[in-house]
Image (cartoon, rainbow, N blue to C red; front, side):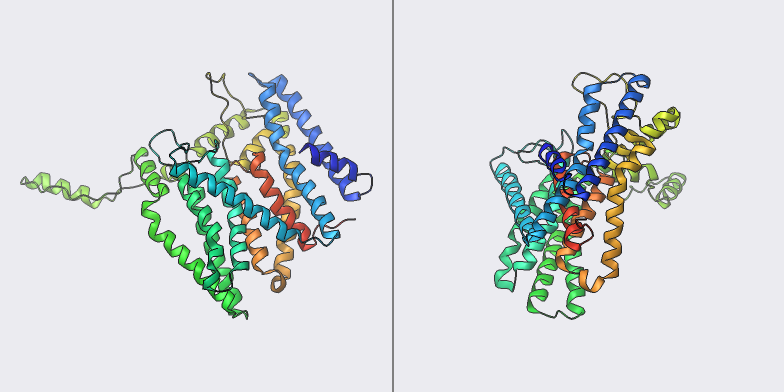
Length: 417
């Protein structure tokens, strides 16, 4: 991040685009300073170091996104195949992660993703949520590599990196990992089918479509033995939800038998709160607390944010304040109305422009590289919105920023002034 900041400052002397980015970052710094000053006077307890560490993570994504924009523009100017190079480096990252997961699992040295009840492994990585998000974001890029290299069933071994990363994601035991595989394989099948129907009836297209369909079927068949399947039942048990329908023993007493029949007629009901807990893993409870604190906050904190983790009590030893772990909510409550809108403005501006461009020139843009990189960023945004640890996690921000920047520069939406 520091290197990119220095690059931005250097290029600001010769590039109007770099100057715009520098001015934006100065404005973001002003918003954060106002946030700190407001909360130092109105928030108790207030831990300055924790606040600064959090905002260091917050600014990571926009700084990297701006830096990648300028980097890709320079590569594009020199006619360097930056999409191919990015795909290659993402592939290397996936192979390293897969090797760590598989070796650690086979040697019994893998760290556990859960402290109790549920099953899951994180390899030698400490942050399960973050490594899971990284794997989900780069998975479609490994699918892109496989599709581009596979010409026939004889060369379908190019799908091996995708397969290894998918197996590693299943080891995690999270809904994010399983859902990411389903989404990428479904996107591959559907996009290849559309391309095949609309004219590209080649052996390559047909082979990759069948391979991705086979992998999707293999995933469906293996689901009952995956950790995420076991974890779903464990979560249901924690919520006191019993999906079994055991037949009650018949009683000789007619009145008691009649009562049993009335109970049998009532189907077990699952409340909306239980469904939300199953999907969001208690994040909805923290969200409700944040909403209440925000409603009670003075106007300055509503506008410029309640700081890191909102209002919190003195934490227990070894524990810190609890975030919602849903990035857009965390950013909104931490930065406030003004801060959040300022932070999200470039992301929304470029995302909307790319969607309009993609739809307007659909015949030219509906290609496997655009679709797979697009799926990668959709997964990043979706995971950030539901499970967090994307736009507030530097390690994940690197991949999310690179994908978004690549799409913007390659499509010509971002050009040098």
